[in-house]
Amino acid sequence: KDTDIQILDVEYDFEEYPYRTPLKFGGVPTSNCTLFNVRLRVRTRDGKEAVGKGSMPLGNVWAFPPRFVPVDASLGAMKTLAARAADETPSCTLCAHPLDLSVALESDFKHLAGTVSDELGLDVPIPDLCTLVTTSPIDAAIHDGFGKANGINSYNALGPEFVANDLSHYLDDQFAGKYLDAYVSDKPQASIPLYHLVGALDPLTDADVVDRLDDGLPNTLSEWIVADGLTHLKVKLNGDDLDWDVERFLSVERVTAEAQAGRGVAEWVYSADFNEQCQDVQYLLDFLARVEET
Image 1 (cartoon, rainbow, N blue to C red):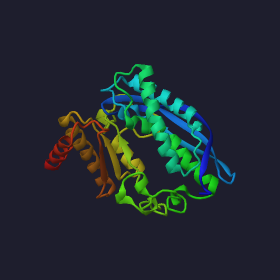
Image 2: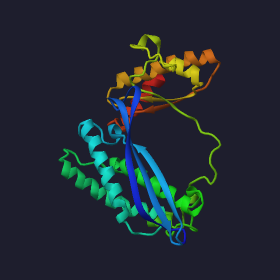
Image 3: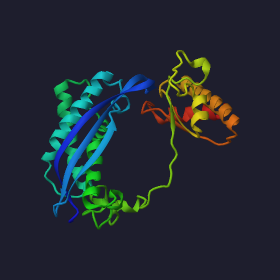
């Protein structure tokens, strides 16, 4: 395809962001976030160039949980893998659609993850999920560069006009003759709900506040609900302590119900987030059953 791109070079950096207050998820308190930022220059077959960008937090706590290796070791492994993957990406000389570039690079990244695991002497090799999270900014930058170089929305370039192979090439014969454009909206949503994250350490009421932060922002969940008009809450849970998870969720509901009643709001939405910590489906079913019974 004339719209195909080739990767010319890659630049990257890491950014450290301290949290306003500690955030606990997956059973681990965290106080900062590391971003992996990628800038990737591409060229189309007819010589048009552009720079695509991608960024992702290195979420080691959930992508490479501490039950496998210590938190510092998993973050260090992700940063090492990120840098090595970015350095080696330009060695892919394929000129193709981003889907094919990503498929080609994925196998290289998985091999590289194994090499990094051996070099660092990790007790458990870097999981595939962790490899995908770590290298996702590269994938995002490829798609972004493709769209910019061709002057199109890359989400609207997933059909046969742009992609050389149908989905059976990547999946199986059930998808013969089908392309990703059949599964992606051709128009962006006018609006989407924004979820407020309720960390496992976040104070729900004044009684939970140990040291109040006087920086002009809310300190408790009830204050956040009123200040931002919240209707969607993402509740961080442990996934390995059913009693605690149920009580925490119900505590959030009690505080939310009272705050929403004061605002005259009758409907709100929850997302229960266990961060990959549930050992089996039964844990989740038991959690839902006990919440429903209460």
